[in-house]
Length: 212
Image (cartoon, rainbow, N blue to C red; front, side):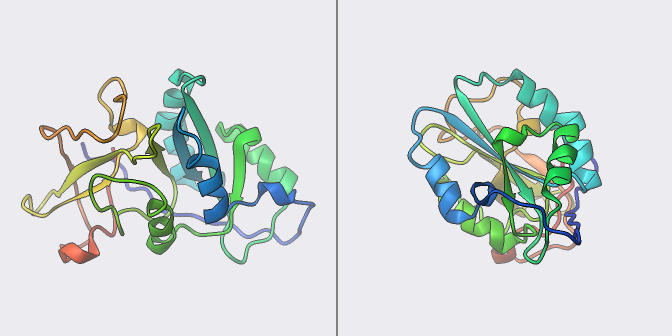
């Protein structure tokens, strides 16, 4: 299903307000949150309250999906992108996050803009049944993990070149029904059509996705 284009957004504030050090997150902290946890599924939700695409995605997909999750089985972490050089009006940022639907008790500040290389480092922390490099960029995005820290992924094919296919992280809105018990078994009968800005070489994967 082809829908609206999601683009990355960042915003720079001019003043710094007492950001708790524990609220900053990087690769090491993401690994510490997820890798030792072999009891729960995990969702890493990358977002910004100042991105219109994020606002729509939360309203139409993420909030309804998150409301149905069994919190005894899932752990959800909101990774708020502020950019490498950004400064923070922290209290205002958390207020805006809360208004969008983000649980600020589980919100962390990610000083990255969500370039493909930023996501590649995160994807490489976990297991995947197929390579996922260079398949996502910007915000919003969600990376879903099962109890064994396998990433949910799915086959995608270029709308204009149906023989050009790759695998990308599979998000909440990409499930037709119940989320599978594990992400190690591929549904070979299912794939998703997307349109790219150009027909990229296979090694470059996808640059822009129209998401459902």
